[in-house]
Amino acid sequence: MKQEKIDWKKILLCLGCGGLIGAVNGFFGGGGGMICVPLLMLLGLDEKKSHATAILVMLPISIASAIIYYSHGFLDFNVAIFVSIGAIIGSLLGAFFLKKISSKALSYVFSVIMIIAGIKMII
Image (cartoon, rainbow, N blue to C red; front, top):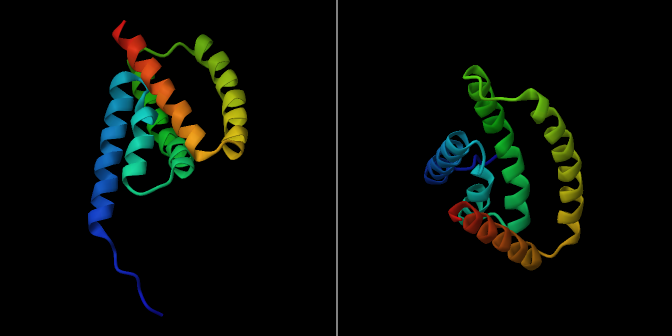
């Protein structure tokens, strides 16, 4: 069997992107996913794989951030429980529609959402 060569450059690039995503998510309490998708696309993943991979990437860093926020008294479980239920339902619907939408349409929708979010943060 031929052993594949380890691409250390790509591994280091992935680690750097992951560090940036984690820092943004931890600092802002979210938003890591908004930069995760474009970074994953820069690493060579297509649009749909980038979105799907971003979801998995966000899980452990969201848990880590939640633990830190909880330890500092910033987490409101009464709100978090109901928002989480809605988020689970929404994520199931989103994953379903991700299969149905073209990559080009997904790119447009994602871009518009990012622009609106950016404008909302400024205003």
